[in-house]
Length: 118
Length: 114
Image (cartoon, rainbow over all chains, first blue to last red; front, side):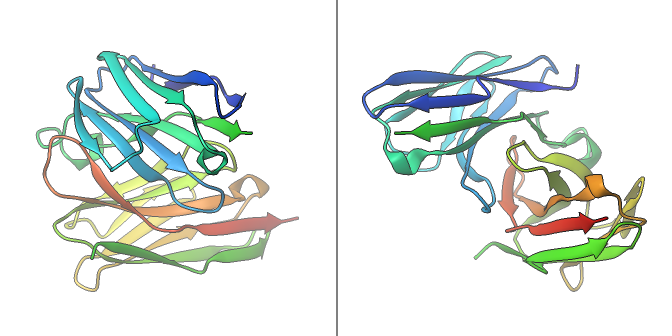
């Protein structure tokens, strides 16, 4: 299994809603990432979890709340979002760095959740 | 400032033709360089990964080159197919932390026309 699975694929929510994005991988990867991608722009890093601990928060507004319940799952909880938060949200995972060599540092991306905030 | 620049921004070629996409980077400390293919509305898919000691790496009809001295990379696509229409993103990995810190280029949007 070399997949990162994201659900849902599409999500439409109002500004007062609470929703969650889910990401799952069973490749034994201990680093998991959330990226946000606007149309025709490169992905922007939001959060990194390393060994289930939050390692990077790229100054993301608190209306985005990540959670890593175990080594296979990554969630992104959404509350009181703004229309400008509409984007493709990508989850990714990778092996720990260093000992395996660059060939094994491949970052596996999920297909993303296309989020629209009305 | 860590930066990855790609050219051209967009490209249209006829099916069956070859093309070359360019990537220049100023990133420190450099770890490796990757090329990703991204279809619209989908996650990026890795094509190649190269460290500074590798000059060329191929993946089917895709061949990436890296010149670590000039900090330039290219992605050559041979005998293009309609399914090659996508964005191609050059990504440089930096640092030596336990997870990956990546600098993304803005991508080249390729359209292969029949």
